[in-house]
Every structure is written in C-alpha cells, then in structure tokens.
Length: 362
Image (cartoon, rainbow, N blue to C red; front, side, top):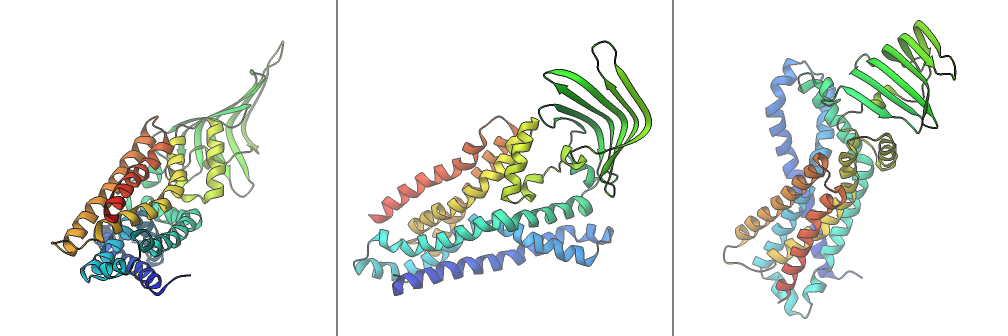
C-alpha cells in the first residue's frame, strides 16, 4: 500500500515530468517554426499539412528528448524537497533511503510502460509523418534523398531469386536496367531483363519495357522478347529501395518482420534497423537509471542550492544523450555490435547510478 509520503512524492514526480514536457515542447515548436517558416511560405505548404507536421513533431520531439525531460524534472522537484529539509524529515522518521526511493521507482515504472507502448505503436507513425514532411517540402531534392545515396540496388529476394535495379524514381515508381535471375540448385535457370520497370498500382502488376527472358536449357536456350509486358512479381518496387528512415516508421511487429526479410536479402543496413529495434527496449530502462541518479545527486542539500544540482543534472543528462548518439551512429556506420552499442550507455550510467546511490545512503 502507498503511504501519504509515497503518494506525495509520486504525484510530484509525474506532475513535474508532465509540466517539463509541456514547457519545452512549445519552445521546440517555436524554434522549429523560426527556422522553417521561410521555406514553408516559399513552397506554399497547405496549413493542414503544417498542422499535422507539428502534431507529429510534438510526439517525435518528446520521445527523442524524453531522458533529458525526465532527469531534469526529478532533479528539480527532489532539490526542492532537499532545500525545504523535507527529505531530512522523512529519513529522520526512520524511513531508509531505499524505502524513500520506492515512489520514484513506481513513477519510473509508469513512465517506462508509457514510453514503451508509445515506441511500439504511436511514435513510428509520428516519425513517418515528421520525416515525410521534411523530405517532401523542406529539403532540396528531398524525394531522391529519401532513398539514400546508393542508386544501384542488388538484392536477394529469396533463396532462388536475385534482382538488380538502377536509378529508382519514387514519384513515377520506375526503375531502370532491371534484371532478375532465378536459380535452381545453384544453377541459373532463367534471366529476365528490361530497360525499364514500372509499378502499376491499379492492376497490381509491373510493366516491363524491352522485356527479354532467357531460359537456359541443356542443349538450347529459349529467348522471349517483347516491347512491353505485364508481370505479377511477388515483391513491391518500394521494398527494394526503402526510405532511409524506414525502420523508424514501422510498429514493433512489422519492424521485426522487416528486419528478418532484409537479413535474408543480405541488406547492408541491418545494423541501422537493429539499432532502432533495440532502442525501443533500452530507452524505457533508462528511466529507472536516470531516476536513481537524479535522486542520488539532488537529495542532499548543497551550498549552491538548486542551481548546483541542476548544473550537475544537465551535465549528466547531456552526457547520457551524447553516449547514446555516438554509439548508435558507430553501430550504424561500422561492424560494431548494435546490441552492445545501444545498451552501453545504460550499462555505464547504471554503474554510475549504483555508485551514487551507495554514497547517498551514507
């Protein structure tokens, strides 16, 4: 059962965290508007599109900076408790420091579950809307940049089929220099080539121009040539050249299926996708670690008051974000283990949390 003190601290924990988010989100929106207003007016972007963008921006921004918001909010209200000697009174009543942490852990659990569910189902849709708007309206040649720098795509579709396309055009759903090779028991059985392949969304087929199919036989090869042919392949052209932020836009189930499919295809972006997947689990865990660090740092009444605690808190919070970004990028751009890269900040700051907690108990 929660005591009056537990309810008091838990209420302050959740209320301060909520207020912190509500204070910083409008500031983030104002800064973003000031940076992009000229391009919005220049491109004559509809107001409805802008409104939807800032709805997605709010979710994306809050999720990205959630560790900083949580850490600073705990530092803030715990420092006030310490300055008002409320913590001294609580501990003097016979309550241990570990028992004092109980409402903080409950608060961290509530926030973690909320962030976990947001990351699974709500944040992906917001990320898609946020990134689509930026690449569509705000970046020069944005739709081409959405597909990355590599215009040549060579993929393994399954155990038997390999495909190559060149110069994919997102707007027209067209790619050039198409080749499909089909193997049976490591032997090439047929090869399809076309100068151009275009997806027809109405008929759900591909239109192949300058179509050529060469079927290999034991004695003679069979060659079929036609100027244009409709073919119902079992893949979507957009799957062959996914947008650079595709992993961020997929809910958990689809993300896992997508990673498995890309792994079978031999995709070179697997580490990027795995970083996104692992962060869905690591970020909620950071709520507990940062909460413990914040309490340990701010529960003592210092000579500099709340200003000193906030300065220490800001330094630790930005160090956490720095480690998270550096190791995430390292995993995406190299052969560094994505699992280790994602969890390394939690491991380092988890050790720091244990150390600070032991000192705070003394």
